[in-house]
Length: 593
Picture 1 (cartoon, rainbow, N blue to C red):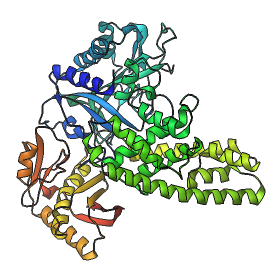
Picture 2 (cartoon, helix red, strand yellow; picture 1 turned 90 degrees about the vertical axis):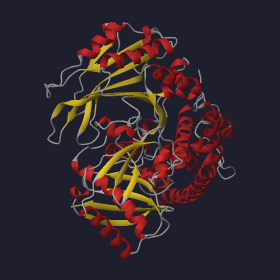
Picture 3 (cartoon, rainbow, N blue to C red; picture 1 turned 135 degrees about the vertical axis):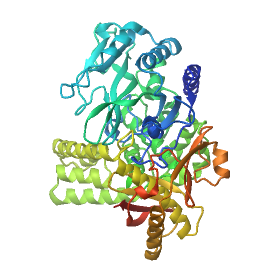
Picture 4 (tube, one colour; picture 1 turned 135 degrees about the horizontal axis):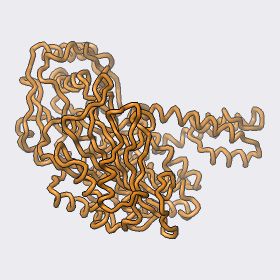
């Protein structure tokens, strides 16, 4: 079964269960208060999981493109990806555990024809520190009733704080959260299924995650039963595709093979024996292609930094495969293969020239950095005829040299290299990176605190003020990131703002706040919203019905919240900084006092 067929079966199944299909949103969240990338299918559903009514009802499904950077160091094995598609289904206060788990099981057994004897599940095992949150015996019982034997059901005791085994959220400081139950599949073809399930055995691959949003964490840190209990079920399309096609390696599916085969052609090497570098190259070029198509370009900060890191890491591994980067535009050649895998993504075709241009530009910049690194390497050798761990890590971190390349250069010069010391330096760096990524790229629900809600609402006033002061109705939002302390707002504009312009924008926003305007919400079709002058990205795909938020005589936007009821709740708006984000995009950082 190929990607297209799998998606069709998935959507048709959940539509038969009265779910409405919702659009596949951009990887760069619009009007989103928390993250740089869309990291899960539930990401665009934040306000509705918090209780707001969804225009298309209480049962929803879709296939959502996602980016996750927290596991970037894991890419290279058979199952991890930076870009992936997530199939999801949601109940917004409608059905609960029995039906949710039942849907997951039925789809796996009857639609995908997975053998029941190869399935096992984990459920939440409780936490002694939270006596009001017991082990999820209810979910375990449901699995038993469906025919999963008790020796294939494991209670994980990670709790709600540290490892969070089978516990989800909240993603922010507050918000919905709850236990998970995950389905695993025994992937090996030639090894008998063990009688007892051991989730630590890597042959058991997680293919399903049912999040049971049963609780709500408040600002005091207390976990209370949620007023609206939600189901958030997700599963990676790549893993399912490998599973149903009886493959032990995701990269052998049609979702990856066109890129892998092209890497083989460019390098003159086979995938077998070169799996790790080829997987990394395929993954990173695909992810970079997808992010650029949605509007981000290589840079030194935020989303741009991620794109740059992905491209350069792919180029480093292309060099280890001895691909002559001076003779061919390897990244463009591979990006063209990405486009063939996703013909249903029209925006990829529409943005292909931009994609190719940005990849080529970054590839050229990398070559210049590489030349500097080679000169630095020679200086190290000339100095004391060896490469220390510190020097090796400098080449890795500052010049993009993978350790395999450093070893190769050292071998050519017949000088020793402190590889063990380098590995220690690398592990320390990776731990710091993971800690930072956990905060900066955290997935999921918005922090639904009053501070975050106020700051999000102020972005509507900010966009309107920018359009007025700069006399440009074509200015659009290009991204946002909001914490309870500050907002960061990216918008399309080609030059630096003058001090007087910044002051006028600030004054106009505060005037709207002081006027005490009511913030109202309406539901209508995207076409109606456009006719009424609502701000949005109208080349994006929307559902049949959207939410439109209006601030009288100021702003009208398609948005999914969260918002205050009246602008008088916002306080005083202060712009702290205005700077460049990327080519043609400016960035404002601001606070509310």
